[in-house]
Length: 312
Image (cartoon, rainbow, N blue to C red):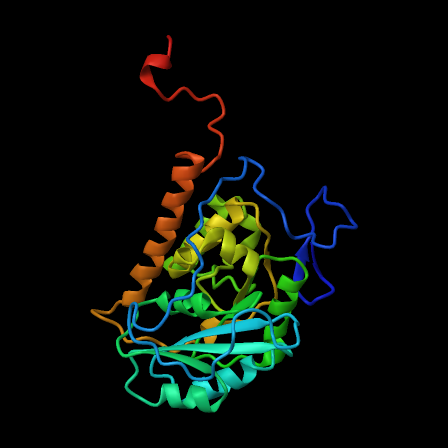
């Protein structure tokens, strides 16, 4: 049964959960113990290490000047001059102390100028970085204790973004968009199917199709430090590692970004990004089975599958 929690995100109470638990939807994998994860060191890179970085508005690392909680909003963007200004302006109002980092890469238009004019700090790369690499670069440059991830082509009002920040402030380590994609069709989209399968294998079937592949989502500094920067390049992997490590993963409110996301140009009748995203989920599943066993921690009961163990 789903109820609305105090900060606006949905709570899914387990059958035997404590009625006084302020975080009823959070539950950890019960079939296996937590897995030790060696994180990728979170260090800030200077200009000239991968590509020359041009910075707009500079902000010193750490908290805000008033010593208050700082929120970092990270927005990868490529040729998004029509929408990036509005995305940045909404993002700046998600919290009183907010930095907005736009990772502008491979653009041939005025995306960088529009982002700077709207008040963002811009990290510019002349060449395309590839899918989701901008998330990792933005997180590496971020100073906030809460990191919110958006896309440069989808304008979401700040009032709908604030609950993701509030969820992390209330104790979540990953706050996901409670959007699951259409599953009532005869042929389910492979990306939607991959999201559901990964959550089931992660022992979080309650998450449905909610995924770090989609935006918006927010993570805590604690999660970033524990899991590391590199897995952010494959959001399903970061999500699986977060769940397995015992961190708190919740859904917030549903924003149907799939209905407003621009249709990508197809190659030979197929969206090339589908294969990339599905492969990211397969990599996450491979990580799960390598750490939790070939059945991802699920019991095989008393089956005898090895021939020499079977006696007539």
